[in-house]
Length: 235
Image 1 (spheres, rainbow, N blue to C red):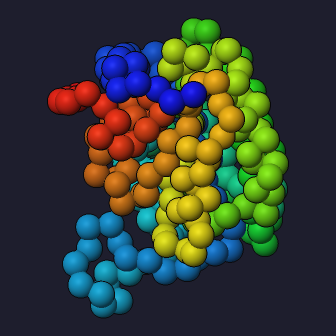
Image 2 (image 1 turned 90 degrees about the vertical axis):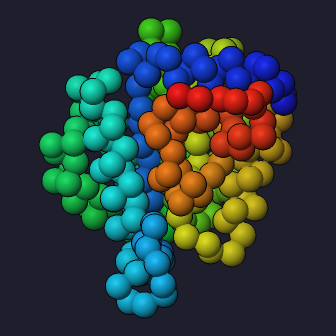
């Protein structure tokens, strides 16, 4: 179901004004391709000093986002590392983020299996969605090996009445520019047979320049495209 600009804007504004009652969960791709190089966010030029790994870009972005979350949720976030398997850590704060990040290296990095990660994250989110809004961020650089299963999981939960009215939102954040990834992630936003529009897609460059209000708000409202909202939409 495609949301109207008015309904999408209402959810965005509500999300911005209720950050203190929103749980944030991160899913972070640790597959081997995340070691590939990309340009640092905000860097100028194309020399070696402007380059770093996709994983380092994700770490820097995650650290900054969690720091912004802390005033609203001192218990921190839930962080799931995934490759061919996955590992979940609760209560990740700005103080323990870097130490926790090292645990990502313990997952099997020889592929990307995403459907079980999404199922675990949705089930955990739905348990708490009656009392707190649930914002899920999935950071990834490639198409998963289980694309059909991913579509099935997202279709299932986007038709669950418990996600309605902006209670649960999931944003897919693309890292790097691997062939076909943007198209696949866009299809998860636009091509699902969904009762509720809970998925959105953006790039990590676009995500990183947003304030926390809009990182969460756009995700909860189901679109990172400002044209999908009534104007102006301010924090």
